[in-house]
Length: 343
Image 1 (cartoon, rainbow, N blue to C red):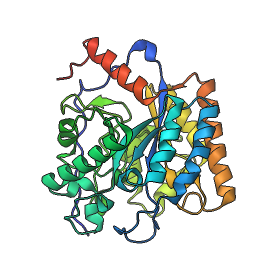
Image 2: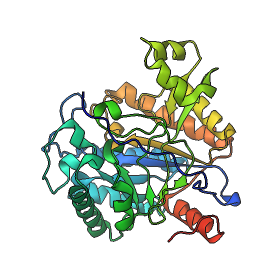
Image 3: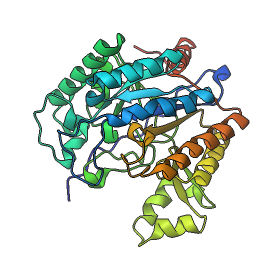
């Protein structure tokens, strides 16, 4: 068994982002914009193909039809592929979508580590190597798009004890690497069970954390992460609880998350006062055959229908989309109001 990964501490009590009152309850979509690889096989440095990027404009048009911008979190194979960069530049012409950073260490130079599962979580690398990989990728993105990225996600959500300070030092303002309620410790990755759904200041040079939203639904949802964790020690406990309508853990993504559960999760999140709902998907899921979530044309149609239904419910609930720049402006307004002073 690999050694346990980094257990991310709960935020301080006074660290919650106090969004401006007129910002309302909003949602945003981050796209893990990355290379293709066989998810059932070990990771390899040679997996750098980005053919699925050709399908991304189709997904973008679906989003645009609902007035929804996306923040494309791009990694090294994408930013060093001229075709991919051209596609993304065209998508940015909508004036609201934006580029962020996603770091897959196994395909991101410098290549000074072994390609093994534990090292796929960048926060497990030596601080100097993590910093060097981040600097290379940030520089490539700034060069390709003429603007330094300020929003970050670690591939596999793999932050470590040095990650937030390194991001702040590189000028990042928002991290989106924390997946509320999830624990990757068995694989040597981070444990986010102490992290909830509310945005918070990470105390690293004014860095804001926007956790990926995870909602517990069902009659026993008050038990939350604790009960879900306990059920994991019971043979088939989680599956049985879900089938009985007692407890389901739902992330806001069409990848593995059934539509009806996702719609219920949106309603629950709104009722619980979550002010910023974070949705995500992997860019290769925009075309069939590249991820286990979209294997054929029928699953691609279902993937599109999931987003259509989610956007419809969000509109009915009065939850409007927030763009990359609108989020940054709202964070600035929160600090100017004296709710939190960024260094």
